[in-house]
Image (tube, rainbow, N blue to C red; front, side, top):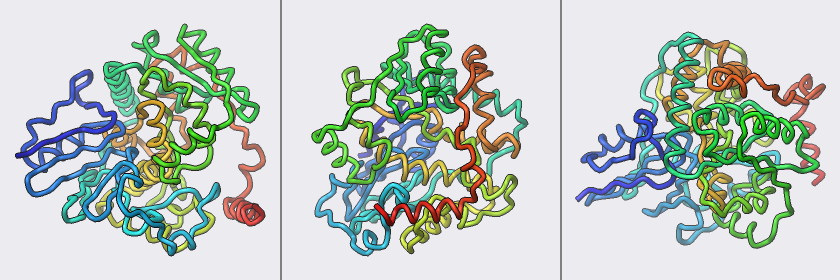
Length: 417
């Protein structure tokens, strides 16, 4: 007997507004082929009489952790969990170095199931199922049209699943989310967080946008976290979600009354050449994949190398770099906080889509640099929204400081804490 189930929030972005039905998957290959078409934050469980197979979403955003024949979306669902002091003592897990790489966790015997992999729960073996080949070639215009089609179809599919909540700032990622909702503007809710530490343009621009579009918009003041909410949040994330996401946990709790599907701007930087070591890389450098870390102990380096070894040969370097952002920066850095936010709503992102990522990676190199593609998408999707001003980059003089110098400064500040 075989059974198959989809856990989390998933849509089939090849069949918009259609109910997901994987019931005719009779083999693991069938399950894989159907999973490849799914976007969102989810895990697919395919069970046979011999074993259970678990397949992950495009970014590994709905985390799956496994150990000794057990698996769960939270490490704390597994039995006999103990810290691995070798990892804990070697990696100073705090604000400046706040995520683990590869399948590494700070717990003995516990591994994170990599994005776009299938796990045989009985044997503990894993195998990548996407991508299996390089992406194609598209002009800028072709790519924009295809991206907009995917985004609008995905937006429509999420609206079909339930009440949709879209977070807005003055930035580009959330603007694409709003523009993708052009056909459903009056059936969604938007919100913005406000506090003295949040730039005024990240509050005022969304207000202006939602006034133009006549949206149901909430401005929510950031409140101090309460101990009970943090306790639940930390239990789900097993302490792996720290920083800004955790700081607004109790604030986001105020949105928990409607069972919203929350669409965030997570993974939007797939359009921003995030890990590229130059504007036209012809190779992949491990040092570039490690750029976000001040401390680079063996567990972090090995995690990156282990992940890189899962990537098929023959992929263009830009595709590999973008995969690193999707699968590692996404699943390992953003994922724990997104999992924990399931306390308040069902999280997802329009950018967590294999079709969308392949389309972006097929576009000309210059299109994929710096995030200007996001502006083009927003303008094409909803001109009135896409042409409205964005928050200006306020990095100022710090943008002129070499990354190595910034890291030295951060490291010295860290030692003073």
